[in-house]
Amino acid sequence: MKKKKAKFRLKVDLKSMRLWILLTLIIVMMGLSFGKLLDNFLGSSEGVATTSGVADETQPANEEQPKDETEQSENAEDVAAENKIYVIQLGVYETYDNVLNLAGQLQQLGYNYGILKVDGKYSVFSHISGTKESLASVEEAMSNKGIDHFIKEVDVSTDDLKWNYFLQAVKQKPFEMTGDFIQTFTDDEMHIWGYYVTLSTASFDALASERQKMLLEIYQWLNG
Image 1 (spheres, rainbow, N blue to C red):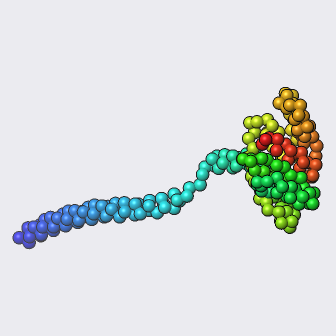
Image 2 (cartoon, rainbow, N blue to C red):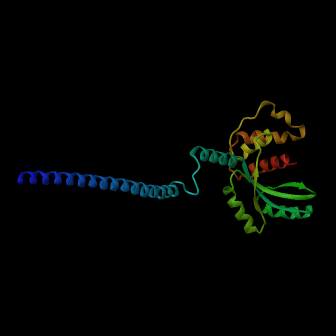
Image 3 (cartoon, rainbow, N blue to C red):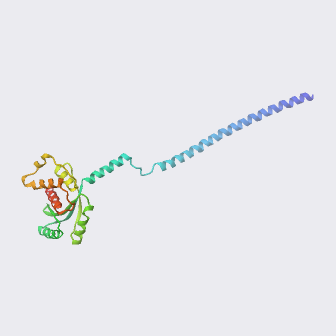
């Protein structure tokens, strides 16, 4: 009887162990599944937050232009600056007597001047240069003399040979004129041609009186 009882207890213990093992496995699997779901949920939430944060940092409101576009923009600005000249504008007068009064003040300073007649009025200008900074001494002298003035910025078209060569002369760049350029001048304009020839090769101080006289006359002729 005792042996049978022992066998019976052994069978009962094995069944109980299997049941507990099975339940343990089921609980563990459920725990792993739940943990995985929770991790996925939290991971996706963090991913959205992280992505938003990265987007804010890596995509600034003001994006820099690509290098090629920046270089092209800078080159365009350089070309535009190269095609500008600066003229000291002295005023616009209704009568020639007023121009003569101004002319007397300019002669006291040893300055030349040019006149353009626009809409029946006289526009007076003096000194032409390739840079605004080079006119500083002239501005100071005129201010001390009480002469009203301002610097006018002029964009020069390089399509017209007359203006193109004039631009080179103002910028003090040696240039060679085409052979048929002389044919564009009349007999009365040959002294202007002579100015072009002189300015194409001769070296002058930027504000030299002789150089300014030629530039002023050419500028007046081009705008006439």
